[in-house]
Structures are given as C-alpha cells and as structure tokens.
Image (cartoon, rainbow, N blue to C red; front, side):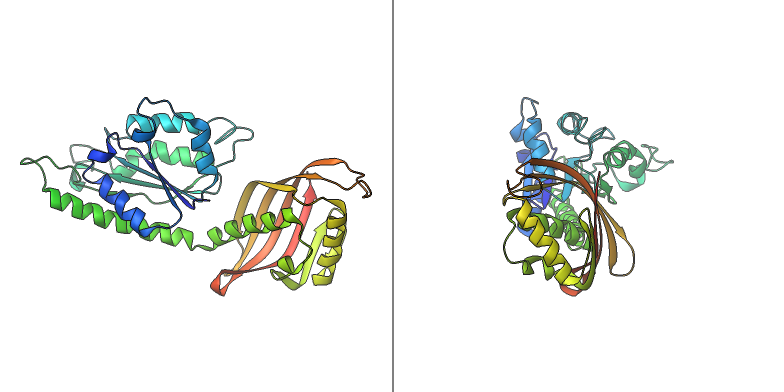
Length: 319
C-alpha cells in the first residue's frame, strides 16, 4: 500500500522547471510514495477511472501537485477529478471511499504574492480562489489541509525570473511539503488507520494464537458483541474461540468507513463500519451459511509512546 499518492497535473511534466524539482525532491525524501504523472499516463485525456480509484483507496495521503492556471487547476487534472471522484465512490449514498484521507494542495504560482490582494491586479487571495477545491474536499470527506504554494515560479528567459531562483524556491517548496507529509504520517490518526488495517488482516486469517490480538487489549477490556459481553483477556479468548469455531479462515473484513475522534490527550473514540464476508463451518450454529454482514464498531483506545495501541472497549453492533 502506498501511504502517499501524488497526482501530478502539470501538462508537460518533463519540461517543467518547478514542478519537476518538487517531485524529484519528494521522491528522494518520502517512502511509500506513488507519483502518478497524468500527462504521461493519459495524453489522450482518457482516464482509467478504476486504476485511479484503486490508487486512492490504497493510500492515506493524497497530494495534488500542479501549476496554478488561470486561477484554477490545469485541464487534465480537472478532468481527473471529474471522472475519478464519481458518484458512489467519492460522494452519494455509498460514496465514502475517500472519507478520512488527507488532501494536500501543492501548487506553483507564477505571479508575485502582492498581486493576489484586493488592491492587486488579481483582486482575490489564493485562499479565495481555491474555494471550489476546498469544498470538493469537504463534500467527499477528505481532510483539507492548509495548502502549500509558492509565488514567482515562472521562468521566462531574459524576461521574468532567473532559472536558478525558481528552482531554489521549488526545492524550498518541496521541503515544506515533505514536512507536512511527515507530520501527517506520524499523527496518531494515521497510526490508528494503519493499525485497523493490520488488525483486520490478521483477524481474517483467524490464527490459533490469540496473543496476536490480546497484546493490544487492556487487561480489563470490555467487549460488547452480538453474542454477549466479555471482559478481560480471558473473555476475549472465549469469544475468539467461538469465532474460530464458526468462521473459516480467509474471511474478509471490508472496512467501509473510519471516523477517529479525539477524546483525551492520548485517548480516541474510533467509529467503524465494517462488512464481514465469510464462510462458516457446517457444524457451527450458522451451519455452513455464507455470511455478508454489516456492523458498526466502536473502539475506545489510547495511542501511547512509540505509537503503541491499547484498546479498552470494543463494541460491535449489527446494522
């Protein structure tokens, strides 16, 4: 899984003086990075929607990297948003696939800072001009972060700026972008999201050793399950034994929604919507029935030093 996906919207990425520097610096600094150059992937403007949606599903942080064109984004990046942020993917009744992911706008601006002012020749601030993209983030459930942009990023030989100055500003821009990505990747919310993915991947295998799970549970954990209430590690082991006797290994937990709410300095409430797809044993209470079950889960947990997770309450409610 790529933790960071960068969508490069420059129409000529190989000929760019600034955006290319930013992306090359980013590739040297950021691990788990996928840079998608739209101009190279889709020179005919025919977006592979499935491929792009898959790339977004498998990431935590989405960066839109582009030059500011006519107070907005370049045409191919606009079409990418139009096609990829589709109904029932990014919005609509089932369109929650982007919810909770971080969005960063990273862009280069040709004009000087003073021109983007009510008294300047562009009249509006950068923040005002990007309101449509900000609202897109809100509608799709993306976490909108303060954008990173840099002025005076156009080089016209003998007319406007020096190439070395533009590229120096681009390198500084990349460092600011890297710092924000690093901050988001190390945030407790990112740790929790990564832990949830690992938790359910382990659970799908239904290993014999329950210690794989109890190591993350408080000694006095309370589990409120459809089967009843269980307490402590021994209670978890009793419940887990029943689960292993019911469900066949290699089941699938599809996490459809995650909402992380801060409760205290280190404590969080995590709301999950999870779909369980599983086969059951013929001699279990479910008598070999195939399961497609949607549940809401509520976890109370702490993120401690060194990003260690401890769950103190685990509630599952069938929808």
